[in-house]
Image (tube, helix red, strand yellow):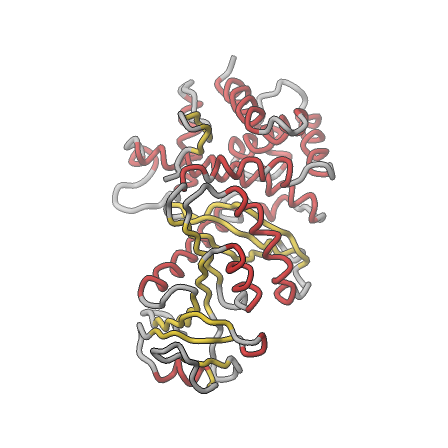
Length: 376
């Protein structure tokens, strides 16, 4: 039996064991599709089918994968949400930083995406696909709870969660949703001379001051300034803390609104949001080319993302294993870092298969249950 076929059997058995309530035929195709994308290094279904060691005609495998993408019974609730407690198991009692960010898919859709900061990446936990031209920010108060509810249900006890949002996503609905979950929030507020954001600074006794333009405050204070404040006048004001960060090379300051007292710590939390760009790059042209899949139906794309996100967690774990075992120099230059963590994982996987070694699977059993590799 080839090393690829042994890996397929082991991966299918592992995924099936973690999804006992799902229909076995769907679990098997999920395992096929997620492993196929790892082996092929792309999300193109034709190449994924060709990379799988099934011993059947490639067109037959391709049709099988496409039926999975078209099956309305395949959804996050049955094949992804049950995996979240295992993916998050190692965060018990730890600080958790989540990032909410949208990313476009071709010219058709926007993927609203929530991930967890892990090392130099933000790994996916929940997502929702909306039409690209739909005014979805106006519906954020409806969409965001749907994205966050399965994560909240899966988090282990003792987590201190901070949700980070970028400029353009900030609003009272963002704050209200996180407050209901008992989470902290750090969001960036768009500020310019043309915008009309209002703010009330609070004094030492907690009393609000006069209603002034936020831009006027930002223009007068130095970098690192922070204060208790209230914003979002149109929604009846929301209390929190402002922080102004002016960073070298940035044309505009970061104006951050948070539920915890402001300062340098809030700037560091917001800076972690930038790691999501590397994750998106892994998914797009620089990496597995999701836009090359040419899927036109949002439901089909949602199911492709389900398999790809499982692959991405696995690649990240493999990349961490390459570094921890001292094998990075075998795949990357010594004078600079050319290979991303995900690409290192892909190279390590194929190196193991070439030498008939069993690559690490994503999940491993412990005394407390199954956990994902590469997590804290």
